[in-house]
Image 1: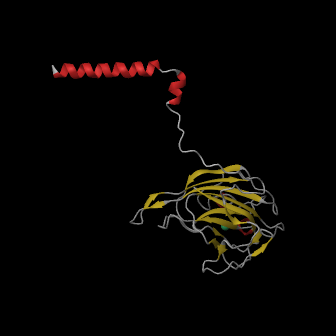
Image 2: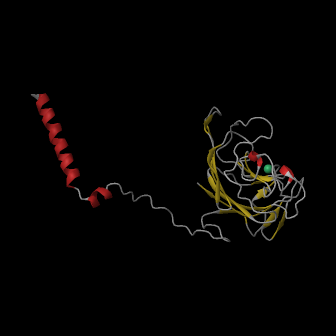
Image 3: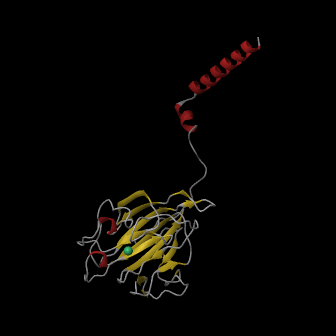
Length: 249
Ligand code: MG
């Protein structure tokens, strides 16, 4: 008797649910999948000269106060009117602040006067978390190994296309970075990912980072904090930077 009662209840329940579903209008059915919360924060988008309103300015018109050398000393690179230029052999610089997942905008310019070739022409680099390099190089009419040209994830990923502008022209990188995660035993929990848009063109599409950038050998991960400094490379060439801003994700 009990089983019959249970079956009966279940059947009635399903009839009730189906009539509820079928009696809904299309508009009501659509509403069932609408999500109203959270409401995205309103920001003012940037343009050619201004960053978005919620960005942290890492290099603007006020100097190099966001930057330092590895030992914490003030950066010995040149700075004038918002433009920062590598001072050869002075050393890499890094942000005082530390970042994890982020959207990074950076403008760079290789020297107008072309002197050398390959890796020796306008070489610098943006090292996310001080480890993962998006190569900066004058790759305009300058052949080098493909996984070391401008926009490569150095020695890991070749850019999808070469979107380089000529020497002396300003170029943009818009980088979306997802930081790797490590567990309490310092083991890799999930790798990092990187997307790069070069001069408005997608050149790295959410590629999985293989480990810290190395010049020789294979990359491998070394445990680090979720947030780390961004480093700019002194490779001996007077590469310039301007309008650097970041949005934490
Ligand atoms: Mg480099």
